[in-house]
Amino acid sequence: MAAVRARLCSRNPHKLEELRAALSGWELELLDADGYPPEDGASYYENARAKAQFGLDHAGPRVWIIGEDSGIEALALGGRPGVHSARWADDGVARLLAEVAGADDRSARYVCELVCLTADGELRGAGILDGTLAAAPRGSEGFGYDPIFVPAGETRTVAELGDEWKRRHSHRARAAQALFAAAPS
Ligand code: IMP
Image 1 (tube, rainbow, N blue to C red):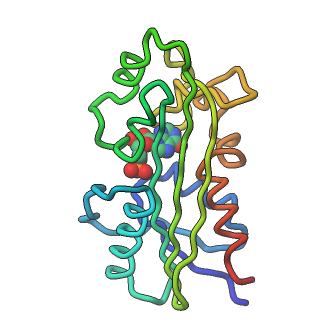
Image 2 (image 1 turned 60 degrees about the horizontal axis):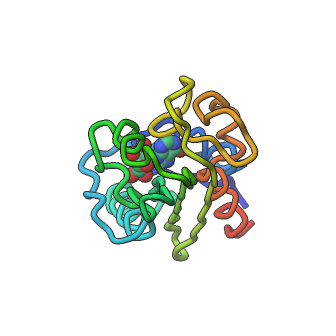
């Protein structure tokens, strides 16, 4: 089969790099478009699907279109902010630290859902990264909540572990590995 040409419906270059590593042989670029739909779905899947549909409407069916949605879920907050992570607060890290202050259990997880629209239909991949919330931000790589997220089995935050670590182990990398496995070879 010829190399898969795909577009990621996102403006986030970190996400692109995390996906590229897992989607071996795919020619993956960011979709160059404005006016993405609001992330107001009830699930990661709905948001990812809406982004992919927007991408398909924009780019047409010549390339595979990947929609992505992700978030962080804190156990002490009953899974919040979850699917609302992106628009939860101007400073999500500060709010999350404030809301879990004093909690006995600082467990959290990152979740990622990918939806890929192809000429033949829809492929999906999901990934989870379990961990705990640090007491204060540490590290400079990654983005978003990475300075306060310590993956299970690690002592450093994702922002300290760095982009190379994320390309292999993040929730997004895991979702991309699942998507790659689901794709026809
Ligand atoms: P979205 O998937 O672009 O809607 O982002 C969801 C929210 O979750 C954003 O606020 C991100 O900061 C956060 N988030 C998702 N994935 C990650 C990650 O890999 N690191 C840090 N924050 C993330």
